[in-house]
Length: 423
Image (spheres, rainbow, N blue to C red):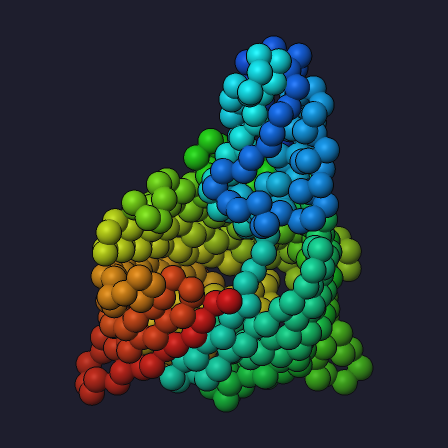
């Protein structure tokens, strides 16, 4: 299938998802059991919460729940309250259980709350350190959908980008439709190895990104499918005299799936998968025409003291893409122990990597872990060598990690320290 035909097919899939997301969002907001409608003749004697303490709710929500006491039971009213509780507590399930009251005309309503909701929108703050590539800091703060943040990231791309970012997103239909807008203004700093191979890299860029995220499916057991569509309008500042601006405007699409089984106390498993497509637009005065595709998938399994993580990712870039779009494996998350400047100083247009990591619990939140990473980065019309690395370290449930990683190469053993935290 040609690139143009593939993009057309994928565009139709996302258009169908967008339409489905809009017209079905409200229909999936809460599944009221069929037997609750016949209970509308009963008076609510009492409302209790199960799974979380009542003081976790806002004062306003607690008051609204109390206002329902003494009134006739309304499935619609409790459906709306359940949706607001889910959104406020970021949980997956708020289900009613109706119990007999103190008299034949009264019922007691128990709202059973369970499951941490999957949040594919947010991105936590993080700190990271790679022994050969330095520090990374990405810190954000915000309230009520808006955020501002500072970033100095030498990990994800072939450059260190430093600057500010901000954004705002608003949820509708119980979080199933979430339009947003994001902005970044960043300064670029390139490694000497990269500068020796490219004449005039850009000095920085601004990104304006309007997007909409749809959640057309939420399953009964913390299962979720999301589709995001949007535009990324990006302008580079370049050092050339005369023309000092270049534009790279792209259509961005991402399809995500995640499901979680079980509970942390008894054993939990989860799977996740993601397909992302960025396509440089021929219109909108863009200077670049390209297609970038990336696939990620993983499995997390935990039972008792044992924990297993499997992940695989890879992708390709075709066409005329800026350096920003190239793959930079060999960092704190992929091919750990290797340096991205050693593997591909200008980044790569093809990449694949996998990780197998096993952990055993030392204390309640602290785990001793060992991993093996494998992968390859290469450019079109060339062949890439398979690289491997291994390491040991500790990590916690709260997001902290510390590893000593060793790349497999001929010659002397050169361990690399990697540490960081998500918060």
